[in-house]
Length: 321
Image 1: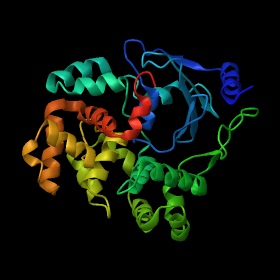
Image 2: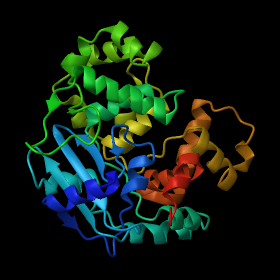
Image 3: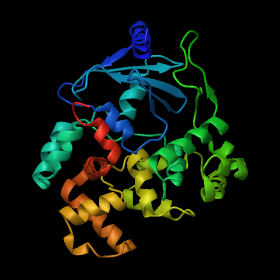
Image 4: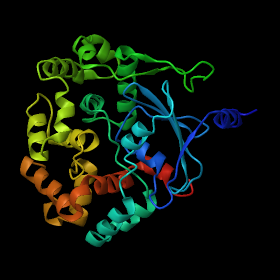
């Protein structure tokens, strides 16, 4: 029996939960591969495995279309539908957003057609905060490797149920706590490809220990401008990283982070007059505001479609692939 057939046999034996995506599409693979989160991995059978908090999630779609049903299970506590729906933002009405986005910018139609069902994840704030410290001047592959090693070194082991084999060579771990990161060894972090970012991770963890408990989580209830000001006040966090954390973990759906790709898109579609301008704080804000002006309260979601369409790896997730 081949690997895919063997894993498909295991799939059929598991007690999968089912979410209907007809009428409100979900593109699982594009969502997980689009540079939002860095610890999801897909095995040969097509199942995606990831960790949210202290829960392991296995997820797959029955077909290649974003209207195909989503099948999932959680470990060690099974059937955590509340967590799955919250994390994948399954309650957001994407078709309604699509109509508004295309009306605001007709060239959005191509990105939507390519990646219909791509959603913004609602990530645990601590993991998102520290994972994006590794995102500056780095490739997605290297970020994934570094963040995975960080969890393996300092995160709690998460066992699967008896008889459920690990799909990869290493077991699953929760993301490290702030306390664990505050005591991390800089030399070990550098060996795990964190490089010059290693002392920043430790320093930020120690600083967070001086703030009220769950300070990062509490930012979800604060206005966007206050959240961004609080984040950029921390050592080593600039506007882009603050915006990524705000969008992917703190419920600031209107925030569109500006990097090389989204800057080029904005210049091409909205502001050709800024083609030769340096990315100063003023220009950064102007470009981010252009996304918000056109796409409104879900500008960050629209940005993710345009961003992913610019990446080479996106070709693996086009319809029919």
